[in-house]
Image 1 (tube, rainbow, N blue to C red):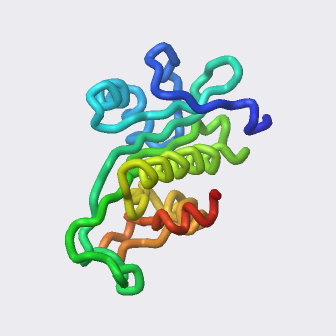
Image 2: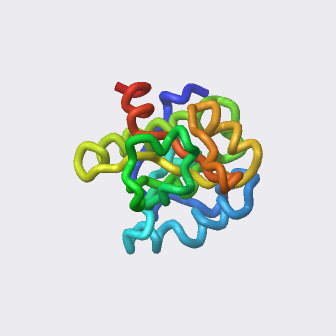
Image 3: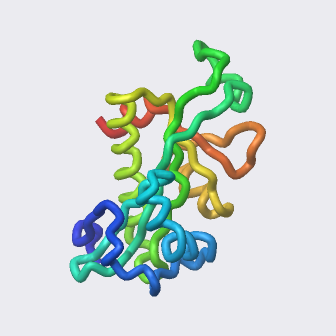
Amino acid sequence: MNPLDFRIIPFDSNIDRDTFDSSIEPLNDYIKKYAKNNHLKGIGKTFLLIDSSKNLAGYYTVSMAEILYDTLPEESRKKLPRYPIPAMRIGRLAVDKKYHGIGLGGRLLVDALNRAIHLFDEIGIYTVIVDAKNESAIKFYEHYGFTKFYDRSNSLFLPIQAILKALK
Protein backbone atom coordinates (compact mmCIF):
# COMPACT_ATOMS: atom_id res chain seq x y z
CA MET A 1 0.00 0.00 0.00
CA ASN A 2 1.36 3.38 -1.01
CA PRO A 3 1.17 6.17 1.62
CA LEU A 4 0.37 8.55 -1.23
CA ASP A 5 -2.97 6.75 -1.76
CA PHE A 6 -4.20 8.38 1.46
CA ARG A 7 -5.34 11.91 2.13
CA ILE A 8 -5.83 14.00 5.27
CA ILE A 9 -9.11 15.83 5.75
CA PRO A 10 -10.69 17.84 8.58
CA PHE A 11 -12.95 15.80 10.86
CA ASP A 12 -15.97 14.47 8.95
CA SER A 13 -18.71 12.69 10.89
CA ASN A 14 -19.63 10.74 7.73
CA ILE A 15 -16.37 8.78 7.97
CA ASP A 16 -16.94 5.53 9.87
CA ARG A 17 -14.96 5.55 13.12
CA ASP A 18 -16.54 2.49 14.78
CA THR A 19 -14.10 -0.05 13.33
CA PHE A 20 -10.95 1.99 14.00
CA ASP A 21 -8.42 0.01 16.05
CA SER A 22 -4.95 1.36 16.77
CA SER A 23 -4.33 -1.28 19.47
CA ILE A 24 -4.34 1.52 22.08
CA GLU A 25 -7.74 1.71 23.74
CA PRO A 26 -7.67 5.39 24.84
CA LEU A 27 -6.86 6.43 21.26
CA ASN A 28 -9.65 4.22 19.89
CA ASP A 29 -12.12 5.59 22.44
CA TYR A 30 -11.25 9.19 21.65
CA ILE A 31 -11.93 8.96 17.92
CA LYS A 32 -15.15 7.01 18.49
CA LYS A 33 -16.63 8.92 21.45
CA TYR A 34 -15.08 12.36 21.89
CA ALA A 35 -13.44 13.67 18.71
CA LYS A 36 -16.65 14.92 17.10
CA ASN A 37 -17.82 17.05 20.03
CA ASN A 38 -14.34 18.36 20.79
CA HIS A 39 -13.85 19.26 17.13
CA LEU A 40 -17.18 21.09 16.92
CA LYS A 41 -16.60 22.96 20.20
CA GLY A 42 -13.06 23.97 19.23
CA ILE A 43 -11.50 22.10 22.15
CA GLY A 44 -9.29 20.13 19.79
CA LYS A 45 -9.34 19.94 16.00
CA THR A 46 -9.15 16.42 14.58
CA PHE A 47 -7.82 15.54 11.15
CA LEU A 48 -8.57 12.19 9.54
CA LEU A 49 -6.33 10.12 7.30
CA ILE A 50 -8.50 8.22 4.86
CA ASP A 51 -7.77 5.77 2.08
CA SER A 52 -9.21 5.95 -1.45
CA SER A 53 -12.36 4.13 -0.23
CA LYS A 54 -12.82 6.66 2.59
CA ASN A 55 -11.85 4.16 5.29
CA LEU A 56 -10.32 5.71 8.39
CA ALA A 57 -6.63 4.80 8.48
CA GLY A 58 -5.49 7.25 11.16
CA TYR A 59 -6.02 10.60 12.80
CA TYR A 60 -4.50 13.29 14.94
CA THR A 61 -5.92 16.00 17.18
CA VAL A 62 -4.32 19.37 17.89
CA SER A 63 -5.06 22.22 20.26
CA MET A 64 -3.35 25.23 21.73
CA ALA A 65 -1.32 24.92 24.92
CA GLU A 66 1.33 26.61 26.97
CA ILE A 67 4.39 25.37 28.76
CA LEU A 68 6.04 26.74 31.84
CA TYR A 69 9.55 28.06 31.51
CA ASP A 70 10.76 25.93 34.43
CA THR A 71 9.69 22.68 32.75
CA LEU A 72 12.08 23.13 29.83
CA PRO A 73 15.56 21.60 29.94
CA GLU A 74 18.24 24.15 30.85
CA GLU A 75 19.61 24.26 27.28
CA SER A 76 16.19 25.17 25.88
CA ARG A 77 15.59 28.05 28.32
CA LYS A 78 18.25 30.32 26.84
CA LYS A 79 16.86 33.65 25.65
CA LEU A 80 13.27 32.74 26.58
CA PRO A 81 11.01 34.83 28.80
CA ARG A 82 10.13 33.41 32.21
CA TYR A 83 6.37 33.50 31.60
CA PRO A 84 4.29 30.72 29.98
CA ILE A 85 5.43 29.89 26.45
CA PRO A 86 2.82 29.36 23.67
CA ALA A 87 2.67 25.93 22.09
CA MET A 88 0.58 23.65 19.91
CA ARG A 89 -0.28 20.29 21.46
CA ILE A 90 -0.66 17.12 19.45
CA GLY A 91 -3.06 15.49 21.88
CA ARG A 92 -3.55 12.28 19.96
CA LEU A 93 -2.05 10.64 16.92
CA ALA A 94 -2.97 7.10 15.89
CA VAL A 95 -2.90 4.75 12.93
CA ASP A 96 -5.23 1.76 12.54
CA LYS A 97 -3.24 -1.44 13.11
CA LYS A 98 -4.03 -2.76 9.62
CA TYR A 99 -1.99 0.16 8.26
CA HIS A 100 0.98 -0.04 10.66
CA GLY A 101 4.45 -0.06 9.17
CA ILE A 102 3.90 1.89 5.94
CA GLY A 103 4.80 5.38 7.16
CA LEU A 104 1.36 6.80 7.88
CA GLY A 105 2.25 7.90 11.41
CA GLY A 106 5.05 10.03 9.99
CA ARG A 107 2.71 11.44 7.38
CA LEU A 108 0.20 12.45 10.05
CA LEU A 109 2.97 14.02 12.14
CA VAL A 110 4.34 16.04 9.22
CA ASP A 111 0.84 17.31 8.46
CA ALA A 112 0.44 18.39 12.10
CA LEU A 113 3.85 20.08 12.07
CA ASN A 114 2.90 21.98 8.92
CA ARG A 115 -0.15 23.26 10.80
CA ALA A 116 2.23 24.40 13.55
CA ILE A 117 4.20 26.40 10.98
CA HIS A 118 0.98 28.17 9.93
CA LEU A 119 0.27 28.98 13.58
CA PHE A 120 3.80 30.32 13.99
CA ASP A 121 3.32 32.54 10.94
CA GLU A 122 -0.15 33.75 11.92
CA ILE A 123 -0.29 33.78 15.72
CA GLY A 124 3.05 32.80 17.21
CA ILE A 125 4.08 29.62 18.98
CA TYR A 126 7.45 28.51 20.30
CA THR A 127 7.09 24.75 20.23
CA VAL A 128 4.96 21.68 19.55
CA ILE A 129 4.32 19.39 22.49
CA VAL A 130 3.06 15.82 22.71
CA ASP A 131 2.06 13.51 25.53
CA ALA A 132 3.11 10.04 24.42
CA LYS A 133 0.89 7.13 25.47
CA ASN A 134 3.69 4.55 25.81
CA GLU A 135 7.38 3.83 25.24
CA SER A 136 6.81 3.02 21.57
CA ALA A 137 5.22 6.44 21.05
CA ILE A 138 8.12 8.12 22.87
CA LYS A 139 10.57 6.46 20.47
CA PHE A 140 8.42 7.50 17.49
CA TYR A 141 8.54 11.17 18.52
CA GLU A 142 12.22 11.06 19.47
CA HIS A 143 12.94 9.69 15.98
CA TYR A 144 11.51 12.95 14.63
CA GLY A 145 13.63 15.11 16.94
CA PHE A 146 11.32 15.64 19.92
CA THR A 147 13.00 16.05 23.33
CA LYS A 148 11.59 14.99 26.69
CA PHE A 149 10.69 17.59 29.29
CA TYR A 150 12.94 17.06 32.27
CA ASP A 151 10.06 16.73 34.74
CA ARG A 152 7.55 14.67 32.70
CA SER A 153 8.74 11.37 31.27
CA ASN A 154 5.98 10.98 28.65
CA SER A 155 5.85 14.61 27.47
CA LEU A 156 8.08 15.80 24.67
CA PHE A 157 8.55 18.98 22.67
CA LEU A 158 10.01 20.15 19.37
CA PRO A 159 10.83 23.87 18.96
CA ILE A 160 9.27 25.56 15.96
CA GLN A 161 12.72 26.60 14.71
CA ALA A 162 13.69 22.92 14.37
CA ILE A 163 10.42 22.26 12.51
CA LEU A 164 11.04 25.19 10.15
CA LYS A 165 14.55 23.96 9.46
CA ALA A 166 13.36 20.42 8.74
CA LEU A 167 10.27 21.22 6.65
CA LYS A 168 11.12 24.36 4.68
